[in-house]
Length: 109
Image (cartoon, rainbow, N blue to C red; front, side, top):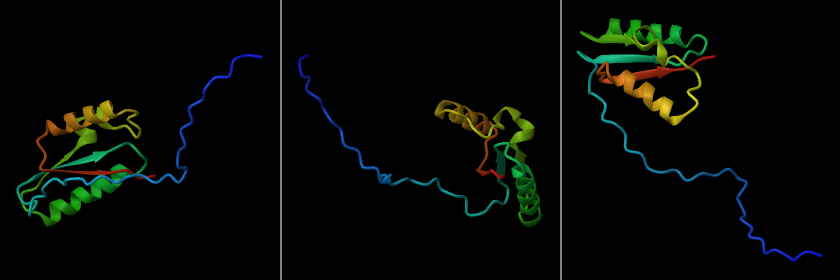
């Protein structure tokens, strides 16, 4: 018989409970008047239609607002599954080049 090996066991809690860390939120502008808003669509079905309507409503309701549709100016950012944090960060950097005051993102199915 072979020599017995010492085993180390790690017990995991199967509940799926996670520790929620506090997150600092970005400051939101008190008004969107005169601001630039980027609408970010991830490519899922009808998300662009939803964002188109959001853009229309914002233009109707907010004076001097600039709406940028990311899928038109940066089509490389349209991807339902980025697959990695690095790729998501790349998308964020691309969108940040448009100097938005706020980004509204949507996905649909």
